[in-house]
Length: 325
Ligand code: TRP
Ligand code: SF4
Image (cartoon, rainbow, N blue to C red):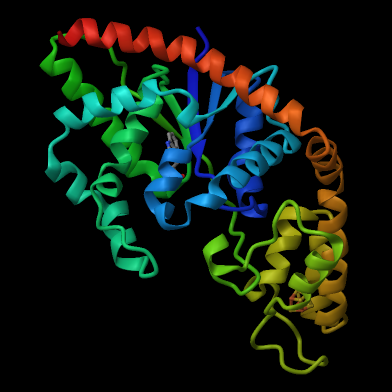
């Protein structure tokens, strides 16, 4: 039996290189060996962005395009929009009844976000329950493998706790334990050297034009110890170099050698990196353009995905209700 995978992303903005090498490549790989369902989780986006909710619809569409341009294949995987499968919310309310408040209040990701995010008021009932809905996303499909980054491990653990509590309360073995498939993020920082994130505005997006890529790369910090062109560089302390390692591993040794011998200037090095990234993204952007020009196709694919997802979700909800009542 193939393992069942569920993962999701919040449609809160453009996808960037970090999403591509961190998550999407793994998802594309998993399609070959697992039954995969990928959700564009718009309710989760609303939990954080309820004050700017109008952008979510556009982001959903762009996300679907980015996914498919990256190789997520609707013939192999189900891709759909969370709010089009209302059964997620039914399971969410059931799980809400059985999840102790303490589990949610103690959640490290929750505490960190309350601390770090100052621009939005996240002291809401919905945001506290974020991981409960996430558990519903996963378990409504009885998924047992969840590809996510490190920051999401506590949420998958909570999913497991909730499913065990459900089994215990209703004397069943209905839900299997689900496990994490860790999507290793290579050390790919944003152009300013901080974590790549749309909220820092430091990301290279999958949809960026050549000139956007060039200007972002030109603005990247390099080895802080290298002040003059004649100073030798330290590639391992240079963010530009780490991009070579990920996107042009064949060029990296030369870059490293020339840099450490001061035979290569940072301006040229960055110009060349911009070229590398533009070429790297070209095939993806070609697919992207085709999908952008075919909005109906994208809609049809999402509708079809929702239909398939719903068929599974409806069955689960019926079984769950029969266990409870
Ligand atoms: N919380 C996840 C994130 O921010 C998104 C998400 C929602 C998710 N539901 C999910 C991920 C279910 C995996 C499984 O990245
Ligand atoms: Fe970084 Fe390239 Fe400059 Fe070396 S030459 S410090 S690798 S940008």
